[in-house]
Amino acid sequence: MNKSNVSLRNRLLILQYEYGDAVIVSAVFCAFALMRSAAVIRLELDPVTGTQRVIGVVEYIRPAPVNPKFTVGRGLYYTYDVRLEDDTLISIDDEVGTPHLVGSAIPIERQHHKHGADTYRLLNG
Image 1 (cartoon, rainbow, N blue to C red):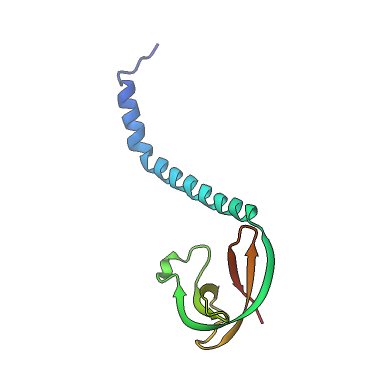
Image 2 (cartoon, one colour; image 1 turned 60 degrees about the vertical axis):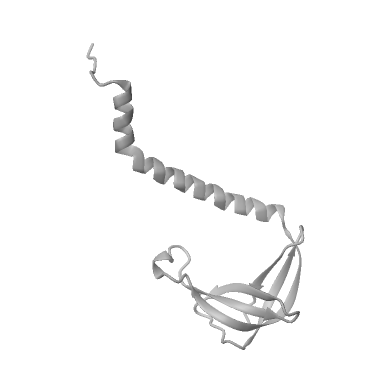
């Protein structure tokens, strides 16, 4: 029988040295996946109960993300600060291909959720 002279502690240290980065990356990936699934579950528990079409005026535009290196998965888009008819200021994201000018009136859909929250999305057209 061939017996190794390396202790269990030393074997664990070698494994930690060899695979430590992979474990950290795996843990971060799993944490990110859990956060994303929690967001989906939260949306399923708070369904949209009603919608309303409102008009808003674009007050400010900023490209997002600010650093193009962070465009993985989504790409570039604009974030608009929009003033609604009831004087509420909201932020909405939209694609780069359909820019809206500052001062222009844009159609927005207000989505009222079961637990009282309102979300907004830009309507095309």
